[in-house]
Image (cartoon, rainbow, N blue to C red):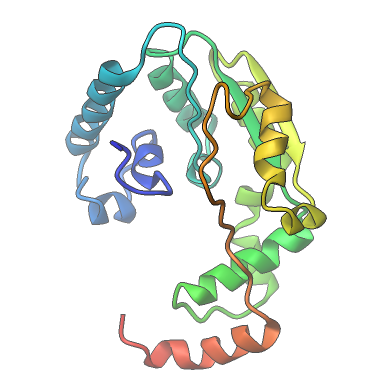
Length: 206
């Protein structure tokens, strides 16, 4: 219960090399504030982590927000205080499906970007899977990397992603982990829906 929000954005922000606008929006205007938040997370982990226990820490922000080797090493060094062995499971989706999904999500979030190479170019680092893999694989102390391709056909089965996770890690549902009752994925808008929202978003008060 102590992670506060579903996408764990704050946790990833603790490991950034630089203080950014999103830090200030989250009440962390300087490095001292970030360090205080990191200490709160550390205190909570010390309270909850038990010897010989296994934890699943999942956040898309670990791939989209931690963009340098140093930031990944910051995260690994932090987690090493509590866990002896770390396995990183990287789910990858084909970029020709991922880019339109990112664009659709941007429009759903209230923005009105133009679907163009410029939009894609600004986000290339987040979808450069080889570099992402190398960042995590080369981080100090990471024991193992597992890469799992997530195909469009997998989206038809709501149980497929947790099944793939189980296959990759050996963590068995019902024994090691109680599966949440429902898994939800963001649904991309249709082309017509995107076109409509792009027009009306500028008129919708934030």
